Length: 400
Image 1 (tube, rainbow, N blue to C red):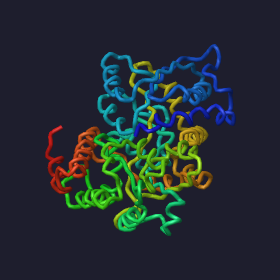
Image 2: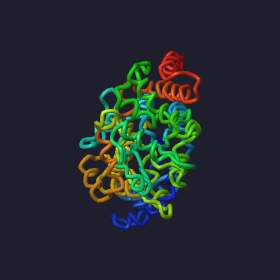
Image 3: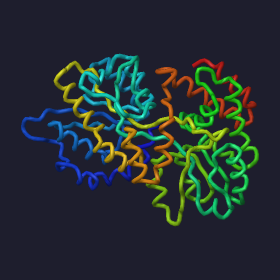
Image 4: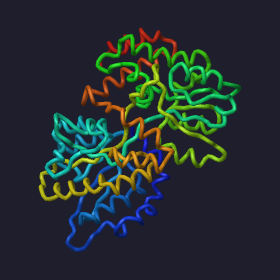
């Protein structure tokens, strides 16, 4: 998800984090440096990380921040007009689509690999057996809970759907709902429903199945018994976080990018656990995060330098810097394991990404069509326009 954009305030701490790295973080490395153009949808406060790697590889930078919403259309236009940047950041579900257009280069040409990375992240950035993107950090979603509310109610963090439903019902009181999640009619709604859908055996190739209906019925039941607000169909993930901070939700589904805001909330004691599943097994959640790619610009020397730059961003040192600055977790499994030990607040996310999946893992560039069908079905069911079974059937049959 493009969730990092909502956590830009924490990125202001990057210059302090980088004091532990070699160099001053300036963009230039001397008169012999070459220029790289990088395009992303981050905020300008992220620039010190780029400048550190530019110094490492001997380059100057031209950094272009663009709107995330129109990035794909812009990239395809740039590919057509041969004006692609030297380094392009993409939301990981978009990598395969852009790679399929021929706009990206195979990173193995620059000696880069995703060896040791979380399998799902590697899969998201691979197209037809070739690696096109590297992700320094990744994220997913987990179940946050208000420690005081659960303790006062004598409730342990739930591990199964039955436990979650019982806890949510018991925690619902007055203006406080027991549970909150985003069920909005955008990809955010799909993203939040996927752990219930996938963990129960749902398959995006055909969402009209009994297992998918069982997952959607569970979410609808949380709304029907009053444990989840009917307004969730209009809430983005940031709205869900606001409900949790305000004490209007005892538990919520959300990601690690919310940690800076949660930690800044006075008096809020919280923790998180992996999202409960029907059987209590490990959840299958979606993988988020941004990948860095090297577009096919036609300039082999510049592309080689861009490859070094992307490699620097994915180094152990920079994975830690980026994870520390954003609240996400390192992509490398061994680095992530140590990170969880050193940073307990993200431990549940490190655990979750081990079994998490790339959204494009099955359908590749066609994933957006399935994502639209999924959030359409959720909306139909939660607005009472169709039963979960009929909602999935209608959504599956729609043409994209």
